Length: 548
Image (cartoon, rainbow, N blue to C red; front, side):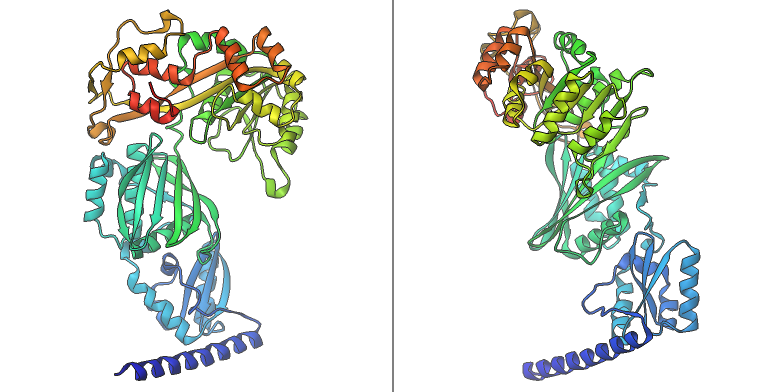
């Protein structure tokens, strides 16, 4: 067949299909039914299992989409008695049914999707949760990123459920915080964020990516046929009776939709003060400040620097039967027993400022405001701190010193800030060297490090110095690092600094005054970690952007 003949036949086919759809739509209107053309709306493959293929062929009806507890049923003859019986059966299983009239061509197109549906997925969960029954077996096979890539090359990548199970099992085994699924022109890249750094976890072909995307959307209750706007959702992983929440973010891109899965594993968050990494001398000064009955304590740092973990640890440390603690968060990442937690919903008018005003009417002793972003929230938080409440919050600034100018930029009155502020904490998370494989490094950098520590008390510098380098083994996934620890700097508001704040000082003026009171920078705190053999100079430079 020549090209012209093919083009002519294709055009005739399109005309006939158009006439068929027009007739079907008209018939649906007369019967008062919904109509859908499946030439333009792809069928969600994970919804096909609700009606077995043989039954679907017989009654010419098929489930084309599941959204929450609603099933969208496409039927050539909605009034057919067998179609009605199937609809009633699905209703008895707890689903709401929306019936759409479809053409015979649409039905045939939908039926073709069964050939892409592996048998294993027919019993797959569509309830917003996924069970990892084989995780103990998979843990042995997914101990490193190299093992994960090998596993991906061996598995049948058309088995969407098995593939997603591998990704999630690997994420829990390696203790990663995020899974990034990034479609490119010819393939899709999978990356895991481990200890704050993205690591290559392998690739999948485009068709596999599309199946995984649909499966994730289905689990998360997202709209499967919407591809041009961002969507957010969540689902739950069940593992040995425990539940792990997964927050889903989907963003349109050039070659498809980017997916990020945030793993909110309650076992991964350290809520004990001793686990955070505060040095003894620093904690001895900080603990009295967080135990004061009033005032405001700010934790600063970029996204992913551990601010929420630090604040949760403070709340756990302070939580006692005689104290009422209320939090205002966006979103609530981890649920804390014995603490009232509220989530802001700006689209409904429930902002940080509005929520904070409401919280004050609940008679709290301690308040956590997830983030101070605007002038109104800053003003309410400061006045709460001055009227008998202890307020914790976060700011996006580079360091602890920067919290003061930032507050003043939000039009806070300098005299009020000076009276209300107890302390400002700056922090970063650095990767710890794997204790199983780290090896001694040459000591060339020790003298350079000591020069950068010349202005801190000598008794803080470790007497026994051993600098180590990363190696990599199975226990650390081959990265050379295992776990993270905080490095900190804290500005305590002394009488002299309180007077200085009242004068709208510059960043340098505040730093100079803080140094007089023994202020140690995050960079210096990190260098002490290097001398103690806990991390590397390379890692400290990476997170602080400073060099010796």
